[in-house]
Length: 321
Image (tube, rainbow, N blue to C red; front, side, top):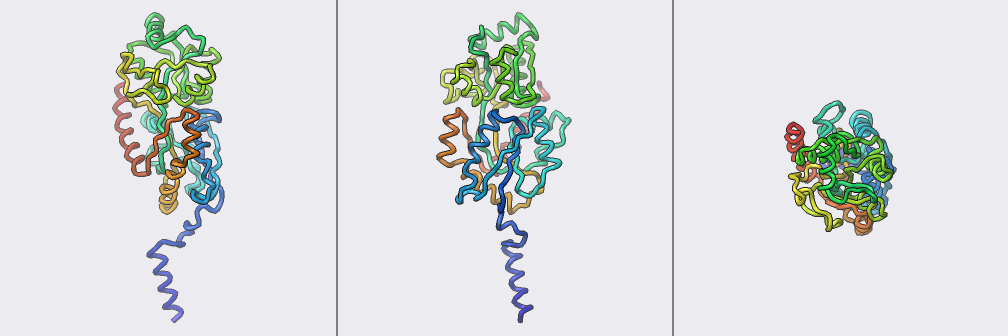
């Protein structure tokens, strides 16, 4: 009889999956979110906000700690996540698209979209062109006029190679028919913005959210948005298309959470259920709005489709550029 009952119990566990692999108690300790950019930049700033309710009982019930692994436009962190991180659900990664997809297309990295599993998207941050507050440039027309008169002489910063900033820069060169001097900054968006403010470069392509905070502080001017529509945060700043440059939204920076491939499916499913609800928290959304950080919440299925669409778009775009 005992053997019969034990057999029934084993069958029920196998059928439901409950407790069979220990994932029903996940998480039972704090979780780490790896950010591939330095502290103070837009990805780090936003990641700290969108995960601030993780410890709540109606969320994960455990805090999420941010760990920065910056370098090479995100390559250092994403290489680590793809090749060294434990796929156990306790190591998450912040993704930036088009960044890691474009880098995998260009090569020289140890990852592609197949090395990660998306969980949820929290934001969509357009690139903008910025200059220091005391710059002689007051419009993109001024910038392009200088570039035409001084081929390769207009220096401007960005967060790295084949990140959204670099893609926006390549699109601007092509659309305006000029040669620019793009200078990737090893410290990411925060370092690139500091270079503009300090006068180390003549301008920069940066995230709208970083630029919004800098403009509020009176340290930069924002001259144009690399998107197909104006931003609600910058209603007075025209898009590049409005200023005569045929540039689409391919450089818009989507940010969200992913895990290494091989993470157990029950954990992926649990995260995919809880994380979007964390992003929808009223406190989170209020803090993001105050920081000039556009939100665009997507579920796991929606992110999988977005990744696939961006892969196709970027393969064609980068081949053309």
